[in-house]
Image (cartoon, rainbow, N blue to C red; front, top):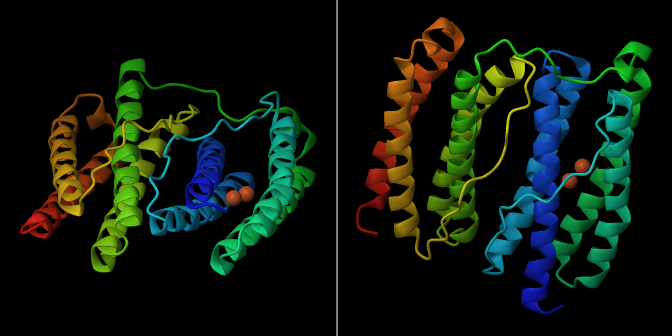
Length: 285
Ligand SMILES: [Fe+2]
Ligand SMILES: [Fe+2]
């Protein structure tokens, strides 16, 4: 298969894996991680993150530009039962899809990754079937979410923080994939990306606790052609984020949520740390 065609094919898969991550994560958060369905969804979402990561690493090796626009994830939102049936259908369709792609590829690593995406999709379908079978009739007929006690403006602020930290995280993941030949830097940046994932989860959990679906819509991803430019952009982003969080810390509505205050204090210190590290890495590049 010609290199660009291979990159395009893998980028379409990347967008599908990205869609699955978001769907299961949002649903898992809204159910609550302390519920069997919620924890199972978040766990499967983490496996989809690995799926996306393997594809992204391959795209980076092939000197391709990763596509960070998630594909649509079609599902019937009528009830938990219809939602889970949609997930089973989605995962089952991926089995022949990935096996078919693997047959077209010669590279043994890429073949194995595509075959693995197929057999792990089969496992996901089985896990969703098991969760569906274990739902009580009331749970099966009901749907996740509802509630909504937080003031609208405050909710919008939290949603904006999810978007912003999500974009910063994707930007770091892109840097670590695209500049992976600079191995040490790739690792350091991926480490910061994981911290951003945790930070964005804090905001998303506050939204989901209110019964509202957190919005995972990535902002614009910068496509810097050198690692120096990418690090400079990352430094600007984290500094802007730190300043915004310091202001948010003093907000009257925020002060009513002690858990959020602790997480903001943590995020502000982590952002100072990340900024100082990025400043050092940026020197001489
Ligand atoms: Fe997957
Ligand atoms: Fe899956």
